Length: 400
Ligand SMILES: Cc1ncc(COP(=O)(O)O)c(C=O)c1O
Image (cartoon, rainbow, N blue to C red):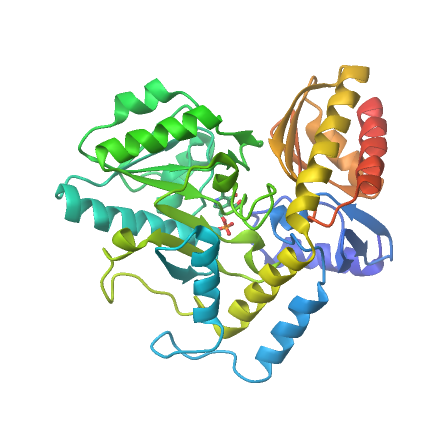
């Protein structure tokens, strides 16, 4: 740890609200899969922020796009047209498969807030004043604003902030009967992560998601898929729903969208998006020209560098390697995920200790609860870097 870390950590403790339990490292530079601390020490990053820098750290094309736009125009209000916003919206609608419209926000929680408001607006117009209820999954994570916290299926995160907005019901993931039992005329939307991220990387079963889509169609209920963490090729396709062949009515995006700059988006089918009226929703910063330029450069690079294929191939290698480590040590009871969004359950409640040891040995991984670890490397990750992760993990498990 360098002197700069000591000073910064002391200031952090004095002047920041204590909302984060930070790790004892100060990163000052990044390059692709690598991070460097204030002592010049190198780390392999298997977290990408938390699924944000899909292109890797300090990507030059994104940096150039941002610098160029910064020098010509940074901000005017959303009452005017600006460069890049429409091109980005067209690009997202194209990736979505057409027939949709976009609202730009600044984060995942804001994108989900927008989706919740849109679903309620649409529900009331279609099913009357009581058609406002949203069903989401237990163990889900949709954000920390009050409405997205209400949608989040984790009582431990909610209790301190009650009363939360009403109208949210949680059901166990992959239990179709439980969802079916909750479906009535008060439901305007079902909201799911195709693969639960913060909960520990738990994918929807393909048959479940298909059945939910069919039920929503039969009942005239919207399917909202929260792709905040799964989007932008993380799982090997532009959006995870493409891997399932289940297109939502509303999709929310953020995290990987501009490789680290703050942007989020709601993408909704034309007929649904049309429920909003001028003045219904808005954002001072949403869809600004700098972040839109960054997002376009990010999508271009994700596609031109073939990172979907890499996410699929290296993701398979990572899951196979973890399964082999589990077989040989008995320390891993389950390996889950798709592409480079991978989670494991450990046989012992040592996740935090293993993550801390890995960090001390130069590899950044994320722990979830007592016994789960997550791996979300930049999509440029190679098999050789997976091998380094596995060596570090094996040693950390042995010493924890
Ligand atoms: C699936 C999902 N939705 C929403 C969010 C909230 O995003 P943000 O932290 O940008 O508000 C997250 C963040 O982890 C997420 O993983």
